Image (cartoon, rainbow, N blue to C red; front, top):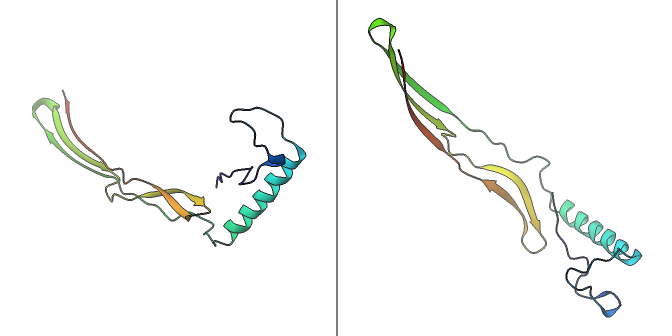
Length: 121
């Protein structure tokens, strides 16, 4: 789980907030703020009682093929396929926000149909 947070919060350290893009080493106060904020966020996320595992995901791939045998060992076949024929969504991770809580980030449904013809001589 990745959590984004603002190290500086609403108040500025010593009345000054670093300029955007300013590269400076972390001070001891920066490190203490970050650790306090991480602990606060960890308590918040633990209180959400999220499941330890993501929801189950399954998909069904289908393939139908019909082959016709012609003269002299020649064949022709027609193939129809569908990847993820059940059109299931996969939960990749939970995205957490202090304002919205935690919501599952889902992918899909991704269904890939295919039609093919094969001939052998």
